[in-house]
Image 1 (cartoon, rainbow, N blue to C red):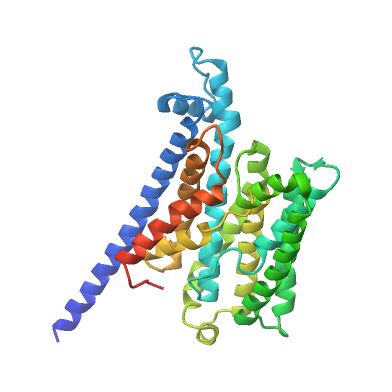
Image 2: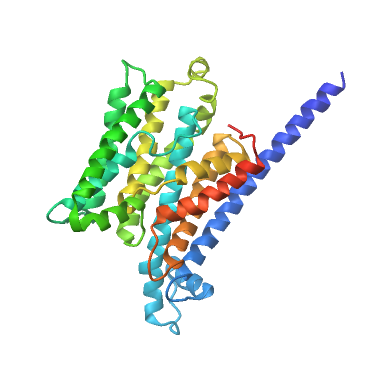
Length: 359
């Protein structure tokens, strides 16, 4: 008789400890993100002290007068060259990690990533077409390459969705198979266009491997609304996504509109992925490793998995971009190479230590 209350109290205490640990993790990662962003802004060919960087950033943030002792070029380097690049890297990392966590939860497949249903291949085809056009142009601050990449990413996902939809239902297996098939088709077209591109081949390949070298404030202003809105909507569906881990039939019995949930989450995850890759290329590995790492450390509850993935993805890609632009300076390494080289060994180490993956 007395053991039942003790057992119940022990479960409640364990649950409370886990909640507190995850909340502390969110707070700690938020602080770490700010510190990493500031440190990444100081690093580069021109060494700028950390306190100087913070001084310049705070002077603009709180509309204070900058220190007249600082050389005029320092403020330009920080605010116009490095800071937009760091912020864009954080946005892209957050978007890819969030989309990866969403796809993995929605499909109940730990191998799912943001590019599973053809987003990367569609964006790549659009970007390659943009590179091969005889003339370049800009409209509303958007170049032809990112615009066509964005359109290609959304169009490919729309085609996959149309092919996979059966009446009013969307079978997950059919969706994945349609995405794989269309991705293979678009990938072959991209390969043919690359080998036929002549002197433009180097630029195309560098874009496909990912780079933040041309980041500007205009890119940040265009990407931010898509990532913020899409991520915000996904976070609102964290609890239904937890219920979806049972199976679709049980989720339906518990009051979840499964087909509507699939449509909303697919649309939002695709939107933030398309916005992210349109300006910086198809950066791989982030959407797989970050959700897995967060799940291994803090568990699979999407109420915490999603926000922790946002913060961890942003930190990871900011650091990866820092390595990409400083490891062989003045030569820049494609960011996709860094994410694979840094991410894969760390992920294998985690799997070795925690052989039983919580999913």
